[in-house]
Image (cartoon, rainbow, N blue to C red):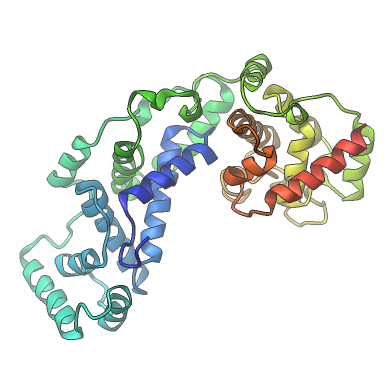
Length: 373
């Protein structure tokens, strides 16, 4: 990306596709929230070092104008325009704004030009309502209407107790504080569900690799049938194993996962989605060191030792729930492994940012496999 471009529509598409794969088990509403938060955070981190409230409002307006309204790159001049067009309670730090603009587009503006532009904009806005809201005026409503429609939040289908829990967890932030989140929700829907559809192919988007499964819970027979048609190697599919030495190893690591309900829950989820339970255990070893009981937060970590949905701090339900989500994602990734690719290395691309993740998981998986024989 050019140093002058803060974020482009193609970047949003990349973020959206990553989230669809990484967080495939989540409802679309939650995926949309994650995409929008990633977009917001990316833009905000690239803004000048201004007051946090000021940066937040500038970010919302940039998304509203550039990405949602005009479907184009966000560039430094847009930041200057926003600073000129909106009224802010916080004082504008012209020194930091000028330094940032100089770094992004060297020599384009002088300090006097920037100061004149910002001050002129603020004077022009004296006649505007001081409490202008971003996102739900007539212009933004038209922008949202022009975006291709997608599955509305109210139409999300959740037929099992587990999936209903996932959906309620994902959209609970709306019920907790509707006033605070209403404006951001509008941008979320437009950004993450609709706007990025331009770059995706049309009829073929319903293919198996891109589909988000949110309606029916998978039985083990369903998971087996799907895994058999894909690229999951036999060694990573579900198999019975002798638990005695595996449990002894976990106890030697002081692992809370050797106890119940953790151990049996991981095995049950692995069986449901046709994933080798030793692979799931290896992932917990790589992610959380098998959750040693000496950790003061062991009981909380053990609810989500796979760090699904980013981390155990962000998503903390119980071991049955998190192990099902992890197993479902591993099964999905397994079906997509291209011929000739090392399976765990392939999964690494989606499951973890650390490129060494696959090496650690492979070593732990091989050790657990040897112990189970």
